[in-house]
Image: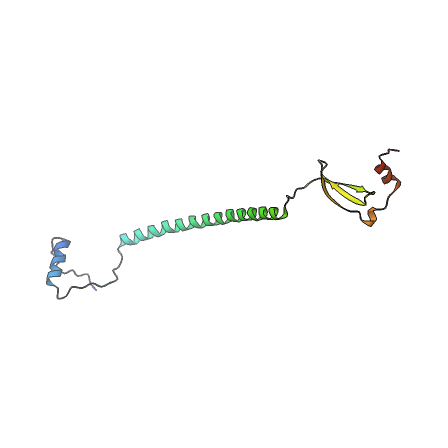
Length: 140
């Protein structure tokens, strides 16, 4: 369809509008598709570029936040396990002492605190002159 304007000699858009409205057989409203101008295409494309950049930045931020939340959740879970267990796990040097009199093996930490005690196993009950000497505190 060729571009043909009704009342091309109108002095302004308002004058053209009034001429159209006054001489039309019927005036009504309807949605119609109007082709985009070059300027509109450029504006929309620019906006889409900005939106794409924003979406990319948001995706990166979401990845970072997910990673941080995962770390926080892991730490919270670890803290809950520690609370449930009632103790912290540490790498410590421990010292076992056999108590032949009470048939027990006691474990101490570097500060001399009793960590745990248990019944002596049958193979641990075997005494030698050397271990008996240590028990009595003799050096001979």
